Length: 607
Image (cartoon, rainbow, N blue to C red; front, side):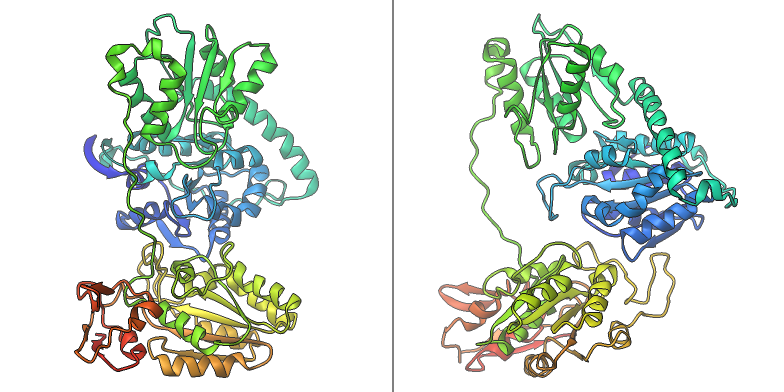
């Protein structure tokens, strides 16, 4: 063993490698992305690693490998689990041969997601064991133990860290390479009774699944990660039940406020019933501190009813913990202080109560300086000026096109939804010009079927593909259109233009969004065609190309501020009341030079 300073996601990846993982696949999504990338960087060539086209593809590839005796890790964020839920629900019934861990990173807040989905609920729904780490060190050990449980009980398991575990850093104990546990897959063995899902098979397997989960509930009561922190409660018959990142917040608070009994739940499903009952003995009240849903709270209330316990259970449902958003050190501190009571806290601890802090300044997200999406949105906006039009957005950097002054995203639901929503709006408002914006990575992940649906059903819409040659929002991962795989192989690029022509789009044109005149003309021309047509705005992400020569504002400037008020580029600023360019941000895209009405902006050359 040796010590390393690792981020939580790095620890999960290194733990999976130490566990002998053979296959790692997934789809990028914050806060999960670094797990797969870390495996790829530390791969000695024995692990197959891929960014799959979406989470469903990753889950199914992983299932095939696990059927063949491989140890498999599939990575995604919580909303990605929705995409993968079809194969996951079937896998729950069918089981696996090799260990299969589905690493799903939840995002309380939410910080970078559409929803605050709680994967612990999904574990209950899918009847799959769920592991919920509380620290970076625990995440490292627990991912290895998750593989062991999966393999022993022939079931996929869910591994659910949250953002504050995924992105926390800690100095932890890590195994040396000679301590790794290599796994040699036995290969796929034909067995239709086991691997072919039929209604009768599912019925019989459902019975076995329920028996397995009863066993696991008992086994988890003795699992070392489900831990009771004993202490001198000074006669106070109160306790705390918590999990995940909230465990750290609670322990920090108790160090300052005074100790009371605490139970950390690391396997929320199947719930360690016997362990919880032992903890409840001698207590009158329990405060459940959790995020996001009231999973632990509901389990304890259920146990009280089942066994006739009179313990009062407090938490989200009673208003003692916020019903939404992530917990913080301060919020947990105040909740515990209120729960313990002023008399118990004592004078010596009252100075530790957090004081009011000023609110942090608001810094709304914005498209990067030089982002080609800004030119794409502006071109469509100019071309559609004075016309009735609706602009359906999607998930990615380009969602930020909704911000003023662009104001070009009227709807955004989930990945790929904009293409289909556009069709729905068009059916009800046929006199509206309907546009669907989607990125190149999202096009491959979830928009292709929507475009096929539009062509098949004779929709009248304009698809706008914002092709910046990367998966930008999650850290510039490759996708089928980049011609490179996560294993570093150079492969044929999958052409979006050829796909669209192949499925029968009425018109397909590609244009550089940083050439404003050509872009506006292209939008006018293509959008006038009846049926399903597409514009591919192709220009690389500003973050992956070398910065060019910054633009400059000359003395021709009349300070009309049109450049600032129409583009919203963060490199365009006010300096002493005058329009100016922040040269530390400007990448020389040249868009502002084309917008200025008096040609006062010059330069702006991309490299």
